[in-house]
Length: 166
Image (cartoon, rainbow, N blue to C red; front, side, top):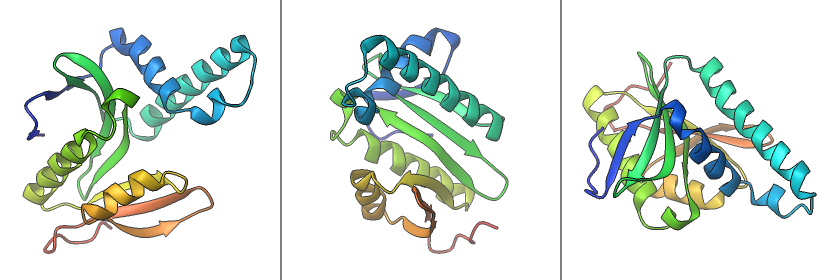
C-alpha cells in the first residue's frame, strides 16, 4: 500500500505494540469513559474488550494484515486489512485523537482504494451507525451502503469497471 503522505508509514504489528493498542482502544471508547464506572472496573472492562476485539478479528480473518500506522516514527493508529481473492476487506482502522481530522484516514483509505483499483477488486467494510463522521468520510470517497443491521452499516467501494464482490 503506497501512502501519498510522506509523514505516514504503515508497519507490521508486533507483540511490543500491545500497550499502544490498549491506549488506542481506550481512546475510541468515549461511551465507557463517560459512564461513571469506578477506575478499576473501567480499566478491566477496557482491557477485556480490547483483547476480545483483537482476538475476534484474528479468528474471523486469520490471514488479515495487522498493521500499525506511524507518523514521524510514532504510533498513531491501527489498520487491519484482509486481502481476499474476490475483494479487500477493511476490518478496522482507528487513530489516536491527536491524529484525527488531519486527513490521515482519508490518505489511508485512498491508498487502499488505489490498491484495489490496480487489483480490480472492490473494498468492503462495516461501520457503526453511530459513527456519522466515518460514514461521511466514506461517502465522500465514493463508498456506498449495501446493507445494514441494528448496529452497523455495510459499505462498498467499487471502481466503475470493478465487478461486485460475490
